[in-house]
Amino acid sequence: MDDLDLAQVRAFVAVAEQLHFRRAAEALSLTQQGLSKRVARLEEGLGVRLFERDRSGVELTNAGARFLDPARAALAAGAAAAAAVREQARPLRLDVWGHLFEPLRTVREALAAAEGAGGVEVGPGRDLPGVAAALLRGEIGAGFGRFHPGHTTDRPDGAPEHALAHRLVRLEPVDAVLRADHPLARAGQVRPDQLASLRLVLPAAAGRLDFLARFAEQFGVPLLEGGANLGLDHLLDRVRTTGDGFVLLPSELPLDPGPELTVLPVVDPTPLYAWSLVWHRDRPDPGVPALLRAFAETGGPRRWLEYRPGRDWLPEADRVQTER
Image (cartoon, rainbow, N blue to C red; front, side):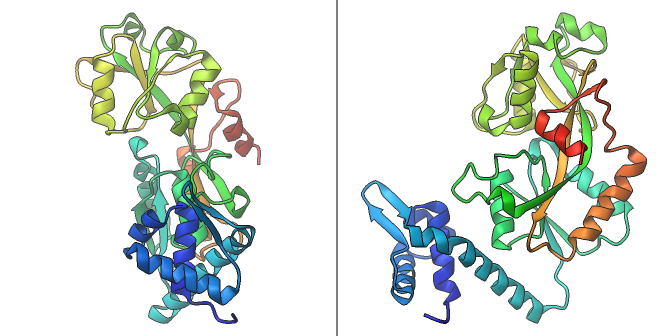
């Protein structure tokens, strides 16, 4: 088989990422029968089985695992070729994640204040693994959020970590939000060790919240697990109804906590939330250098990358990025 049918390749990649034919068919807006036929024709043309199918599910064969990365690259090349025909220069698609902390605040500042980063389309990403997978497929040019090593492959569609490049672009202090009637609220500021007497209210499962989990581990803070992430208002309502509860939020997040809650700076040390730009290491979008310059030129006067080890605290993986 010398010529690949990209529709068949796309069907294969969807099944490989979902490891489920029905979900893959839904993702491609195909019937399950139509999807299965495309995969079968691809296997017939290649002369190998790409999947093992049984009652327990779907798994890639060794041949399928070897074919996956080249298949993704073929789809990305096809998308780039089509874009080159349709328009001279397509805008960079930037997906953001970490929506509870409003990443668009930083992106808007960078794009508004710096020249040379025009032609950027911003869209929502579900989480880091989802954005990483979209980068690998060539669907987006960059991502913006908190990059934490080891979490790009915790979903079936996650991208291999070695395929991604990333650069720290902002370190943002976080504040504690707790009930106004709690004794700590009278101090005007709070230390992390004092927060160990409270419970950190999580907006979702701890496994999806690396920064908050690292903070709790470092300072011995008990966790109050969350269920579905229903947004900032719901999270603050949980603090209002939890006498010993608090949340950590970026200090520049627009926030109206109301009379029942108070916002306190966290000091000695001050935790910093790390925002990074992420892109494909081997196939960087042409717009990435201008986007990096936009963040650097905007963040310099605003001291976005200021970090003092004796005053501030970062999780280990974030601290390593500051030393590069």
